[in-house]
Length: 170
Image 1 (tube, rainbow, N blue to C red):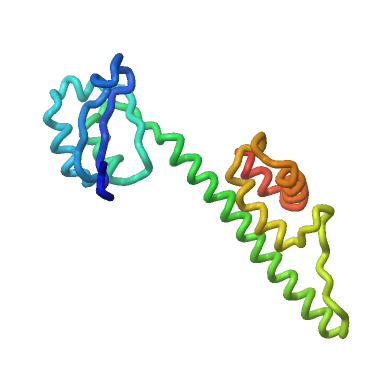
Image 2: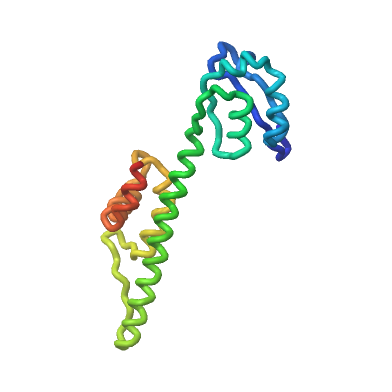
């Protein structure tokens, strides 16, 4: 359909039929272009719009502020979930770097004592680093979709890193 090009779709979610729901399709996402198209809609109708769902981009905020000045703005759920997932992953990666540093320190300490380094393994067999690496995908999923192994890994992860559990639960 788009051949890689972006389009801005403006719809009326309260329309009764699919044909009535499409208000405008504008090639691109440039605020000035979209505003120019939306300004063709009668001002009274645009001012009657009560709510607009949008993404987090600055151009989209400008479009809504200009074309639908009385409408309240709601950030769409997809973008909120994406930000939340990114924040949880960022926290997991921070802990992973800490785990790598801890393992390096423990290896160095073992080397200095002329001992073999054997990392601690959790009941599921993961080392701390492995736990944090292998937890990546389960943190993207709803807990009710976890496999039994993922449930076990999550229980260990959340016990060891309660801040990840808190962030995941938000």
